[in-house]
Image 1: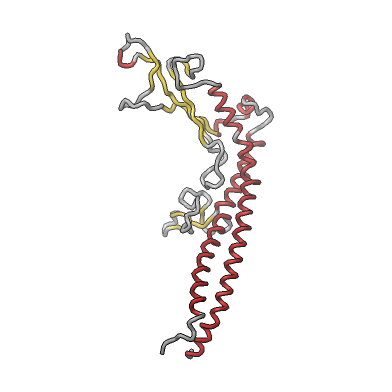
Image 2: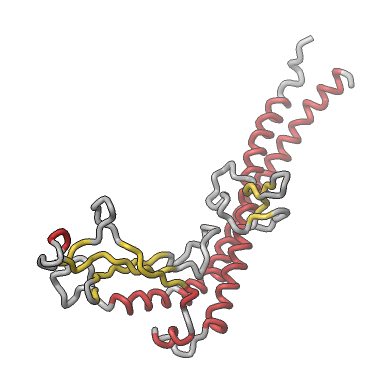
Length: 261
């Protein structure tokens, strides 16, 4: 290649500058389309399951506390207890987040804790009994887990008892779980990196810090390129690359006549 050929190539880089600007515009438009698709997947594949599932553990939880409280054992009319034990119920994951790949529609839990006990405490067997907070070995108040209720405990009979007569797990809930899982796979599917012995190391393409790009993503596996979030992230990385390319080509196209001998 002669010097003149090199100068010609440098001058022609201005066209690359324009091409890369067009690519960036294309990627930007594709990201908008993908974000709209992401919104549709959440709205039409994930949210219906939440609307069906959430009322069920909510009704179960409410049936257990029935207007009771666990902060004042002196008000026995409203205090949640039986025998010498005072209870506390906690709930979690009644409405899972489609943005978190590890969330599932059936991950909700209701936990029963022993918070109080009616005892004479250090006063001995002959002492006066009072309601006292349960404490750990260090003497610090700490609830003790007694029971955990999960989706696996739900039966058709329990659905009827909770006010969902006519509903069955198999016909009225399982299809929504399947639809949720499909929607989540579409959202969060992405390639993973594997070690030499086949052990999964974790998803790739996490340089932008997109939520869900960690080892807890159950939809990350080998040869997966259909995930909407992964496509969005790849396009964002592509736009960053185009910015770098455009800057280089714009600079090079102005230097063709400034080459030193």
